[in-house]
Length: 321
Ligand code: MTE
Image (cartoon, rainbow, N blue to C red; front, side, top):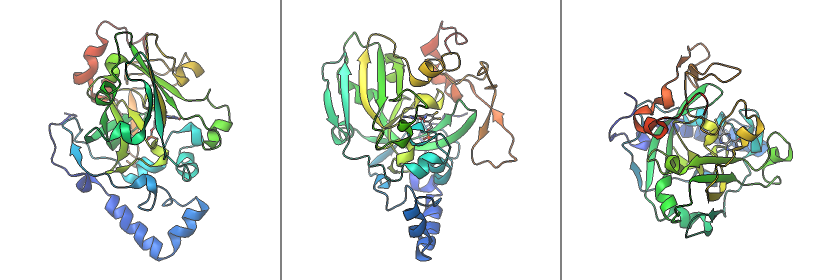
């Protein structure tokens, strides 16, 4: 059973972050971290206790929607990333986002809602109770992780903006600033990165606006200061560093859908029965399990079928991939 009822594990208990930080402290004393951090290449350079994007979040409530699978280590989650704005290699975001400043930050709320406008980060986040949600993350590239996010149910945030009856979809945009995001100086995607959900998907209780992980503010490479998490969809739907949210009557076209429509669709629901045109989606490689570990079967809707399958009743999931 993947989804467990209220769990009693404190964020501090599930983490091997303490071990990580202790090790870091030893390295610091030995003078190893500072040199590496300055060069920007050390495995221990980013998202540390000194990193402003790594501050501890307080008053975080545990969620009954968490999985009982053990989370990946802080190191796995923060050094193996997809974030093309900082490079296309898995370690590029961790290395290249180290100087990115996620504050001050504001989000433009647009379209079919009664409370549009520019909201600063604090106005968006402070009215809400933060929750820890330990979710499975399944990338379309057939690897997976388990991540202890901290965030706000997107539905609670959306209610703040009072969407009206014309709002059928929600479109999200990432910051477009090639000076701060070096990957945007290259044409790997048509910038800015964009994503979309149906209004029903956006309002689903599992959909999260994440502001942290492992009890700390989000590291830059994971999408600071706020990013979407939609655990039953392939990871590319979980757009990072959001600066715009629009309510629309027409279906938005997401960046990957626009780039290669034959390979990436709007729904992008995790589905072991529908192969990517170039590889099977039946199995996945759990990150952190070691190079000799065997792949494990991928679950329909990434294990969240009980909660979300009803959203797609009557929809041909092969055509609407
Ligand atoms: N958001 C933006 N803006 N740019 C990206 O390149 N990559 C996506 C998604 N969000 C991406 C993004 C992909 S493909 C995945 S799998 C997840 O972020 C990875 O999230 P993580 O690096 O926190 O594991």
